[in-house]
Amino acid sequence: MNLLEINHMKKSFGDLEVIRDFSLSVREGEVVSIIGPSGSGKSTILRCATLLEQMDDGDLIYMGEYAAKSVNGKSVYMGKGVLKKIRSYFGLVFQNFNLFPHYNVLKNIMDAPVTVGKVPKEEAKERALKLLDQLGLSEKGQAYPYQLSGGQQQRVSIARALALQPKILFFDEPTSALDPELTGEVLRVIKELAAQKMTMIIVTHEMQFAKELSDRIIFMENGVVVQEGTPDEVFHSENERIREFIGKIEAVY
Amino acid sequence: MDVITMLKQLAEGMIVTGQIFFLTLLFSLPLGLIIAFGRMSKNGLIRTVSKIYISIMRGTPLMLQLIVVYFAPYYVFGVRFGSGYRMVAVILGFVLNYAAYFAEIYRAGIQAIPVGQHEAAQVLGFSKGQTFFRIILPQVIKRILPPVTNEVITLVKDTSLAFVLTVAEMFTLAKQIAAAQTTVIPLMVAGLFYYIFNLLVAFVMELIEKKLGYYR
Image 1 (cartoon, rainbow over the protein chains, first blue to last red):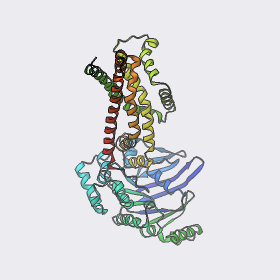
Image 2 (image 1 turned 90 degrees about the vertical axis):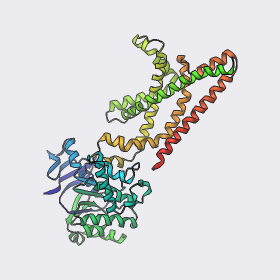
Image 3 (image 1 turned 135 degrees about the horizontal axis):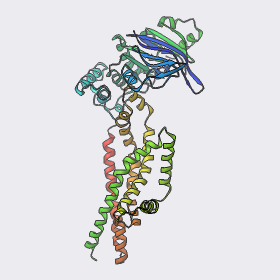
Image 4 (image 1 turned 180 degrees about the vertical axis):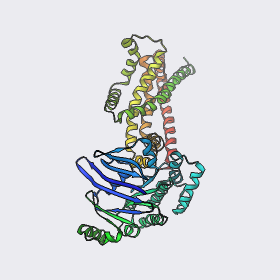
């Protein structure tokens, strides 16, 4: 069964068609990267998939359960209760972390499981400490976000998402706000997650990283998929535009 | 009249002043939050009504508002209350007025919180209420402390406006004694009282600011 299925997603902001027709199926344990130039609609796909934005048309299905269904050319979203359940299936890691500044690291990680997931406090704490240990942050439980480097903050936000034990984890340019040195530590964590067979969808500009890690890469431009395939297929694409884009990016790094 | 007697009389006024001050804060701080929500409502009617309310409360003298609150029940509805209504009218007038100012301070604070905080909470599964009270409001309070301190200090001095409804707060008494005894001493004492009161207010607000200074 597919963990996630998106069928014919369409999304416009006013007159601007951001996503024209996007479909995607993700199986358990798969890592899918979405690459492409700015403004190609990559982030909008993640925002629609994580219910931060509502698509205009298309189906959104998690674990066989509809979050939204296309009816007569329009997406119809399910009720609050269904969406709440569906939110528990995924986690999202933001480009600029969005940690809660008034909570320390431990509370940032524990708060959602305790308040939303009704996990007993002791258990949530145990889980949080384990995650911190896993991500190399065991010393930082009592620290506040402003006391951490960007890389540490991003790792905490990954821990925060993992604490809810999602089936699938989305990353929205997780290293774009970080300098190259800090980028490495975050990418390492994501690689470890991939090794543990975490299902992930990653929007990124880190080509080398996408190439190494992904089972599949989707190249997008102007709201449509230009090519979808294995890293090998995409990186050796015949498509002029893709070659140009990948060449430019690799020249920068 | 000796100084002790004078101080005793003024002290009674100080208690009334303190009552006006605390009761106003007690009711106007939560009411302000409700008005701020109205001002930011998706419903156009609620938004417009809140806007007009704030505009009137900020745009007309508080003294006039106190008079209106006091006389409206009789002139508009034909209801007559006992003399106890004077104090009620003072509190009501102050609360209605200060809530409007607090509403705008809350609004500024709420809108200054990055949208990412709402989004992170939403993705983690927090309800709207949980998001506001657990994530947003604590950060809003930290940000709005300086402008709130301004308002609270103004309120200490504004309490003297209660004299229009002949509520015997401190400044009313000080003026009466000064006139009767032809001396400015009660007025000087009054000035000192307001100053010390506000030193205390500033001190307490600074404590709260320090307490919330554990994060940035």
